[in-house]
Image 1 (tube, rainbow, N blue to C red):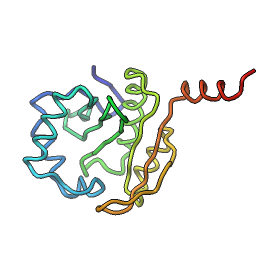
Image 2 (image 1 turned 90 degrees about the horizontal axis):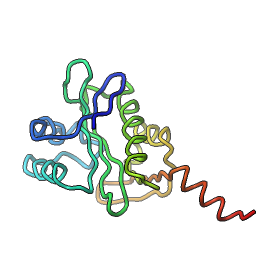
Image 3 (image 1 turned 180 degrees about the vertical axis):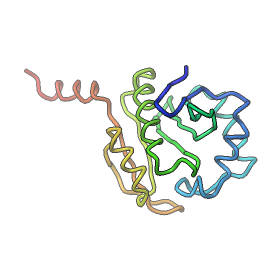
Image 4 (image 1 turned 60 degrees about the vertical axis):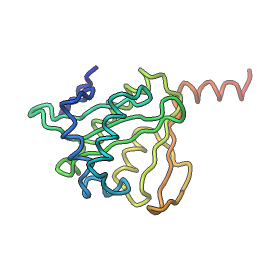
Length: 172
């Protein structure tokens, strides 16, 4: 199902979007905050997995006027610990598009997939992504480090789950 925002269309992936996906994910600048670029081979494998794996809910982000490919949004690991991820082409940075797209995508995904929680990780110094996650209702839960450097883990918990927990903790 397509999700529409003021400036974008979020469409399910099909094979015709592979070259756009590869260009996005093989660009060092686009992936600077995502542990570096993929090779063409690894990006092709990622695309194939995304197309065929039912544990990934993903959408291609297209410009609503021109139909140009702007980015990629997804929630992976739906059968375990669902994780939000996103990447936008550098041409669209700093315009509020990621915030607009993720607000529509994430709210829809949480509702349609009946998710009680979602995690997200972001490089500790990547302020734009941290602000987007906070706007979506994510809370910082941990500061971590891996071979790529320091990163923060955020967690979103749905209001329904929080409400049920608070009711069970405070019986009448």
